[in-house]
Length: 280
Image (cartoon, rainbow, N blue to C red):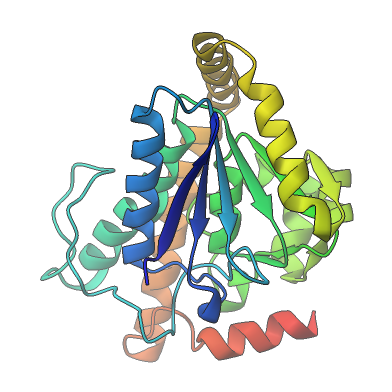
């Protein structure tokens, strides 16, 4: 089964994460499959808008840190950054090389897609899944969607694509990080993170209707408007702020490894993080 499914409906390309048995946890194979699907949509002149969705009950549970398909030690052709392969490297070199490519680098690459992107979110959107939703230009969520970035439980200051203060505002960003608690689609809408909240049964149709409306606009105008807003965000410190926090992120991993004899996740695993998130 392919990790990502691609289909086109008129001027809209739908890219669907397809690991529902693992709540669409993102391994490297999925990351590169997403990249290939996005590239396919960009190169198709008939596609005007791209929708990112998740198969099954949940959009995504975030980075794959525990499924049988976890592939952190596998080499892939690097697409996002000019850096050496993480496989064969050691210590912080290995983690920095991999996360620069498959996490921060890929998210930045997708943020710059010249066509409008819409995340269609249902159920869980946790930690690394926030990164996928945040790189999209618009987010439509079902009323049963919930969100969290609980990685402070690992002693790490948020996920690698650290956009929290820009998409949530500083106060909400601190609350989300400090507590690690889930927040609802309604709360996310109030904070300005979401464009629309719709009934679960209407999520697909409402997302497609929005995509089709956007597709009526001229392609070049959309691309320039997107670039204009992205540049304004960067002038407000998004890119440089993210770089600085990426350094803190890796300092936290190194600190954990020093204290625990090599465990860079602070004693946490997929089960403990999931259980803690359910309690929040």
